Image (cartoon, rainbow, N blue to C red; front, side, top):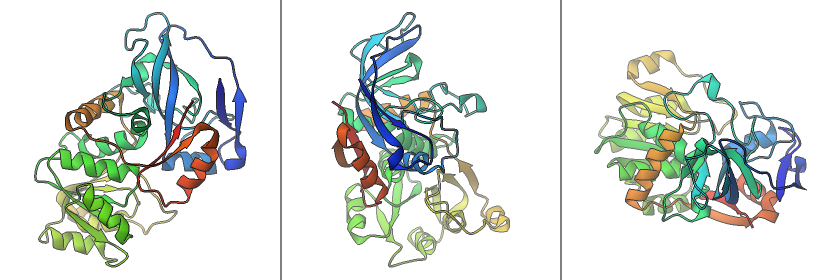
Amino acid sequence: MRSYHLSHSGAGLSGLSVREHDIPAPGPGQALVAVRATSLSFRELMVLDGTYVLPVKPDVVPVSDGAGEVVAVGPDVDAVRVGDRVAATLFPSWQDGPFAVEHVAQRGGSLDGMLTEFALVDADSLVTVPAHLTYEEAATLPCVAVTAWNALTGDGAGVRPGDTVVVQGSGGVSLFALQFAKALGARVIATTGSSAKAARLRRLGADAVVDYAATPDWAGEVRSLTGGRGADRIVDVAGLLHESVRAIALAGTIACVGFTGRTAPPLDPHALFASGATLRSVAVGSRAQFTEMNELIGAHGLRPVIDRVFPFDEAVDAYRHHAAGTAFGKVVIRHP
């Protein structure tokens, strides 16, 4: 079997190499997965350039997201069976409940990831994938889809029919949040800096699109589109929280799922207090949330948006394409 390795976090593309290994045998509680596809997210770029916030071990097999087929199981495994189509959770020990420090070990960081032909994993960190999805589609789910689901539902209240949800841009989290919010009955306002992407966001179901290249005051436009009320929930991927506070409705929720910029203006505590909003940071989600999300995907026949699929031998090119920032949807690597 072949696996990609990253010499160390911060090594960049030159730190990626392919090696041959013996196929491992699963021990107690483990499953061997023949990985059929992986997908890249902004997280993988941070691991590559040394800015990821969690530990990354030297010589790690990178990439958190992957899907494949269970080909062997060890003793005492009843969570999955040989032949199951599965995806692996990003935080293997996080089964349910709130995130905690004991769940910080993560795939493609402190643990080996999925950019390999075979992955040996804890069986109880696997979830079966919706039957209508291909392996390439299923591989997009573990990081950004679960993050989007958590951002929309993980606070206990969740999105309700008739709510207004704002999603920012056309990255993986935002596209999944758009699809999930529509399936939950919400009105969705999407933001983008591209007129071409605006049209695609509308085709995906966005009720309104704000082009911030033409209308820099997107927060003011959100208020205008909501009759001055503001959005009930904002999935903030940019880290420009001061703008989200301006756009949020009284007692609304801002889910902070990351930061695509290096710097951002400081958040005014007076403005946050006056908004009455809940500001919540979101770190992917639990296995239970992954399973709940898959039920919605299956019930509504949702399909992830894929920009391009690269073969396993061209994984470095896949990274380059993803880093260019031009993709609309997920960049996927198909395994042999």
